[in-house]
Length: 288
Image (cartoon, rainbow, N blue to C red; front, top):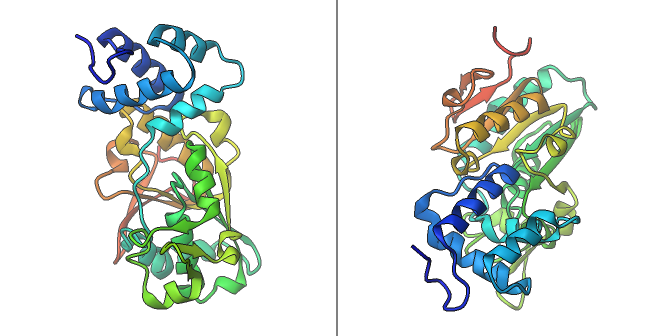
């Protein structure tokens, strides 16, 4: 069987399997058969853009490329980034109403609080975190709050740092926040305040690669929402262990509404607050 996405370049079942296995090893992301058309179309686009005439020659070049440029272009093409400001606000409510209070119990005024948003996508989540803290957490001036955000896709990281958003992306932003932090452009898009952009530190990172994740340490709160649904069981465990290692004792993890850490790993305790259920690294390390 062959895919019919292009009259010139064809992706066979064997090609698809080779690519799927390779991409999984590199990223932890697994494509089911029902994603075949999505994958094939983007493979053909990359093969064409890189000047190759068939999958075989392109795939050989991809695997032996020294600099990793084509792999990064492939990752950028294959990752899905669908988000908006103030998405699933119950976690942000839980942050300012409960989790921050527990975090600062273990801090002295002036000490650092580290929050990690992964994946960053185009920046809506980490910027929402920043707005929530500035507007709704009264102790923001007592501590040094550091917001880190990472993604495997370099294109969305560039977009996050440009911080220009469509009306759809800001549709859920409360009007006072929209007036305070955004500027309406002649194009109809909205530019985020550069002061707010400067609050977030964006970096490229692959949650499945220990070389990338080991630099994230002493984290107090992780937002990792709607990413693990793209992983298989093994990759989810690897990601859970990476987050566990990154967290300070007592630190928290927020997952998406359809994700459950309890089905992935026994490293974390379940915490049920008024606004949301989250996961916590025990104060004395992993449970026995």
